[in-house]
Image (cartoon, rainbow, N blue to C red; front, side, top):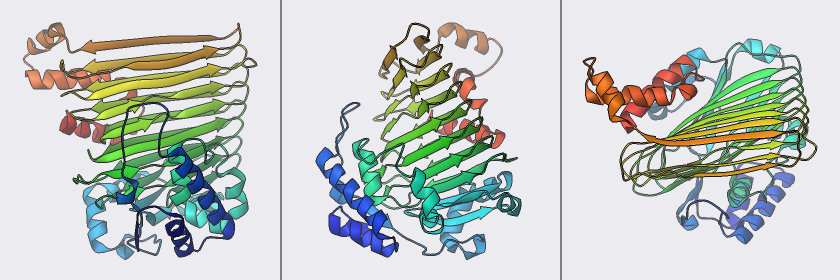
Length: 436
């Protein structure tokens, strides 16, 4: 099934095809109304135009969700195998794979089921655990939050649902992999993660798409709830093709003594606008966001993070690393707000950019607010080039110039690379070599 173009009738068609109840259809139509009123505009960031009539909003290649690779269509299985997805499963406690609009493969270790951990697609979760999902769904990111959150609410399909019960930890990460494979395809996954009290989770996400002349749109929404004394780490390395508009809303709500960590990598895409957010609601809660973005010719990476301090004694850290080459634009856009009641709180913001030529560009656009006199925000920003002195030193050791530049770039990104699992750090190195 394939649905191209956006209208009320087509949204009803998607909902009927997915056999959703009336409450979900009502949510979709309300989101569509809000999207129409917003006219697809974002009040900040780079200017861009998308022809929404040319986007495929739903495409299904396999109606059944399976847990056996032998049941996946052979061409798709071979394609995912070449991308390393099947190999990566060996290092995870569970994995889900979305191809176009639907999750086609999902598997989790039996011992996790015995711990009452839930890891499935959002579509199945809405049918199988409706009360649990609807308690949290759309509460942190409302369907009028921004234009593309409204669009996601209207046409969402696929994505992950994870519930970690109280007093539960996993030995290895859970992973989801998202693949856009068609011309003009839109992918609108919806991810909802709940880490209950005294628990922990590491979730890894990977994304790719082939390059076509037609533009593709990726407009996802991620909501995460971190319970008291719990920890969640969300790691993603997105390697979209240069024809993809990547417009994502990610937000986490953190309770007392909870910890939320965003490890966010952006390589590829024509345009990325993504600002992972921590709402530090609980006292003594902590939030961290470490990001990298790489922009080359005709690419704009408008990325950063948001930290909203509500609880007392809260702590946040933002580290942003950007690289621009061949006229690319890699900019930081961030926001830190320490509210009046968030006394004795602290935030540190560090954004560094490496420009590899005179044609590239980077801007730092921070918004920092402290509304009480016992809290502190520290902010520093640097823009640098690869210095002749560093190159001369390395070349004097007999290292070729091209290898010298590679070593300097990898050193510049070390704060991000060291946070990745080993297999992802190796993959990141290969991606950087191909893109730089």
